[in-house]
Image (cartoon, rainbow, N blue to C red):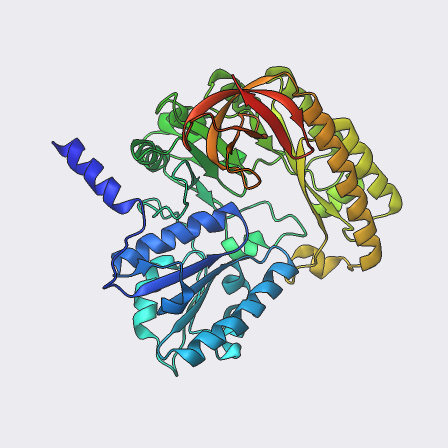
Length: 462
């Protein structure tokens, strides 16, 4: 039957091909979850072109680094890896080195100056990789960094590179239109465009049919997802509608998403999350600063007060919803009072967790062109350390409130500290560690929290 044939094809294509006769590609992925998903798209394209994935760099004829440009230290790490790749070329004739992703888009031909890199490909050029690879010679490296207003890779089923077979990423859109003054993403990933929702549902169902229990819908700003049906405006789909479409695949499939934007997260999205038990009750909502002056300079398009109203709405509709954020320390012109505003804001919200960084100027951004990076490094570091220490206390306070609570947890792996324990995340994204009790990765279990650290809920099986 056609359905059975389709399932066979999905089983064959969803995991990496292991064929010793094929040339090998080795892929290193840096940066965000979008890059993880992009690497899986790249592998799908290269498998169709005859390659097989290897985890051993010493046997790869093609070495790719999928790169990030969001901070300077991320790029410096790649330059260090390029020097390591040089050794591979010296030891083995015919090895090709490729830099793909955001750093490729930002630096373009500069990467070829190393005389190590043979291939430079931006985020919208992955379909051309097989042709670019064929044209590489020692004297003719290849480059394609053209950005697109249409490319979403919607027709490509990514080859899943995760090891646990439990959770997977699905890209629902590409690019960003916000142009925050500090951010390089609009310049490296191009303009925002949303993917056909029916291809997203197809990919999520394909994953579920292959045993996956959780999908994470990815976008630079998922709340601005909007797909216009070319035939009927009545069939246009916004992010709340997409969430509902994916949630209806099966109650056994969990749905997460990232990242939300405070200016765009709507009541409709919040109510849709509350309606479906399998839409996880966690929102990552980057604030960046608690100072209105800094938010305006960052071009975030919301105020401290607006953000707090959104938090109040989320918590009134979804009690116990996990809330995490991003915070930048030491942005251009940040005063001590601006920093204090951020600390007081974090205390008022009491985030469950946060990604915290000190400001790193990115060439080409509005901030780099308009504002001097005038906060001394030692001040940035001191402020960041204060933010980290405060968040540690807030995370512990949040987790202590969980003691005695019960959660349904999706088991993701074995604890690194104790082989007799498993770990998984609750719906609110908090990590629970508990005795294995004969259970296996990929199962749902109910646990009760007995104690905690700032990072983990210590639990027992119910």
